[in-house]
Length: 85
Image (tube, helix red, strand yellow):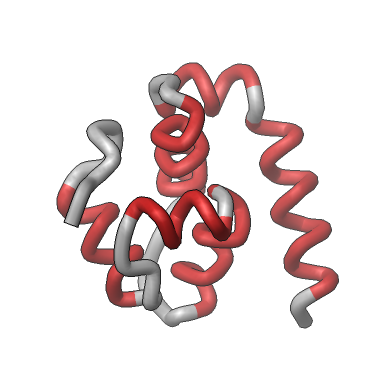
């Protein structure tokens, strides 16, 4: 399996436990949907995973994502949660 360099083993374990097997699956879902899938799989996770996923997919650090994209990601998450309830 090819891993995105920005994601560590704990993040990959969470993704795989939620049925996201590889980078291709992650890219297909996108950061917000992947985060929601992990969250709904019953695993303990925090918003840091969302920042890390978005960072890995965009080639930026999770810290940059958390500062620059926080509001947009949270609004996208809220919208996706509403449509999948």
